[in-house]
Image (cartoon, rainbow over all chains, first blue to last red; front, side, top):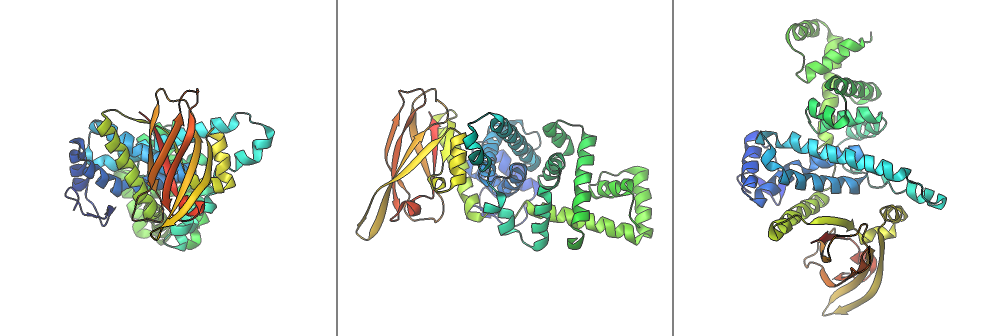
Length: 203
Length: 200
């Protein structure tokens, strides 16, 4: 037991209630790093998954998620409802990921010697080279969904990833994406409909 | 017969618990009467379930454990110092063996040249010394004093040891060399390390 929640060998096993999460947050606020480690254990996979979907690069995802947890620790006192640590963290991670992607886009538009073109293109890893979703998907349907996600228009994928995988409230997705809540709803729906139609054989 | 888009939208709203009042009751009546509608709702539900599962199974345990250690180490370090330490960069020596990552390093203005310096075997334990030359991606405002070394796979019993940190802070962009000793007999075996540089 770590800080009252069942976590063995640093890994979270089984369901955790909102009360457990709130208790860990309260303990972390008192400076209990073990409690915060419990929160990391509970939410790092989800955060990694969300950020990976937004960045398509494993190393960037791991780094951005790490930064998100550190930022969350710094801002923990501003979290009004400790039970909502998960969605709150996902919003932070999502924002950091989108910032990273914008910065990356800016960087790749900076002229570099023409001879660097090939290297620049390869700087963003091909997800298939190390694709956790391909390697660790529990079943064929999930692998197909993961692949289909990558074919969605960026804004639809961002909205769906943050809302359906990250469980970020739509109003916060809207802030992160710079659009209205109604637009988020429509993007999420459009993405779901495309996936449902494309993956008819798996659902 | 295909459903119209508005109905499908309402199905997803219903699934999210966002359909209220008369619209919700109307859809529920249609669901009671229409097996096609129920089938579509079930498919959206299955899709949502699969999406949620994507958030749980993606990253290997070892990577998550390493990440957790790094987060806590970072927070512990800050609590010891009493102030945040700005991370300058993270380098993975193993990456220099891949062309793609070498390109990433160039773009980030990070230069990294690990060089195999020596290996020895004494008392049955093999040891590799790996020198990593670095140029930090941005000038720190004070001297770079510390290097944290993290292990990746395979997990070994003994931690790596930083033998020397030779950072030259005189120039605008500091550069230098760190030398670590680690288990193994070749640079490839010693490579799965991650270095974090902090400005203190």
